[in-house]
Image (cartoon, rainbow, N blue to C red; front, side, top):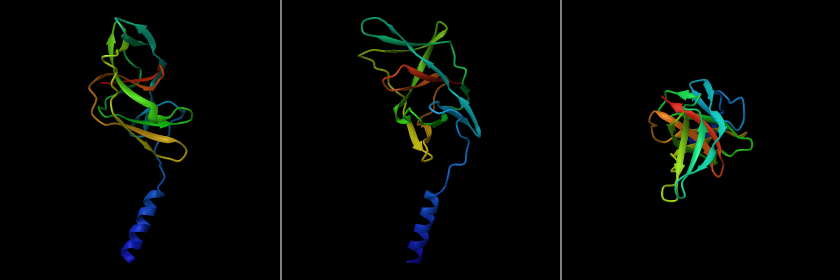
Length: 155
C-alpha cells in the first residue's frame, strides 16, 4: 500500500514538471535548438512551376538556407498560435541553378521525412524531432496544403 502511494506521488510529480528551457521569441516559426540557443528557420514561400507532364516543382530562392545546423538529427522548438505543429512536414530539397527545389508528380509524390511532435507546455510550446538522421543538404518544413516553407541546412 505504501509502495503504491509512493509510486502515485512520484508519477504526479513527474506530470507537474514544467519546461524551463529556451522559448521561441516568435510564434508559428520553427527554431533549431542548439543547447540553450535557438536559431530561427528561414521563413518563405515556395513558388510552383509546371514541369513535364503533371510534374510540379516547388522553388525557393537562394542556393542555401541562412539557418544552418551541424546536427544530423535536429530538434525544433515551436510556439503554436495559428499554425498546428502536427501539419508540418519535412522535405529534403535539391539545390540547383542557385535555388532550392522539390519536384513532385502523381507517380512520385513528395514523401515527407518522419518526425515526432511532443507538446511541452499547455500554452502551445512543442518539440519536433526528426526520427532518422539527415544527410547534409537543404531541407524545408512546410504545413500541409500550403506553399509556406521554413528552410534550414544540415552541414
